Image 1 (tube, helix red, strand yellow):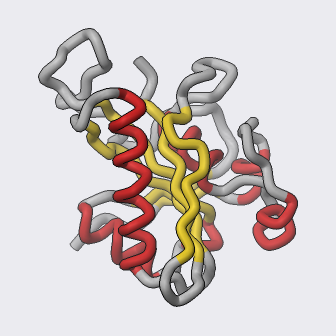
Image 2 (spheres, helix red, strand yellow):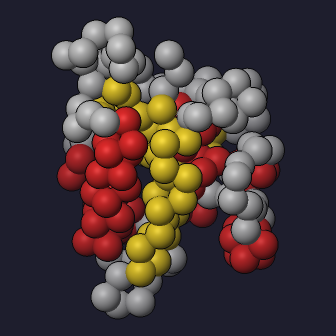
Length: 173
């Protein structure tokens, strides 16, 4: 059984618990170690696990191409507290062995992101879920590392018409 999802509240930016590990490296330092990343996940209510998993796979491919390395390690995954009971999201995280971390809308809204959305704000109370969650889970910000978001906002509309959004942030060097 996987550990229960955690919920983030106010406080300083710090990586999600367990988000760093001895198996992580940064490009140019230790070539044999993977680059550690955090995922920010958003989706429509009722989005199937298959759609979310496909969006994650596509976003990880984009990040690997951008970095020029296939060696990426997901060390954190996060979303908004509204998604703490989202079956497809929980299924994808459990299958991958990720502990999901959930942040409230107020905390997510305090994060500067490149692609805020009025539509997302209307439904969730924050202008960003995936980008903000990725940055919080990675323990970084665009002010500290302007290149932290490797994938800003990858959107996928599934065959059933439901949407999944994935953002990927590099863990601090």
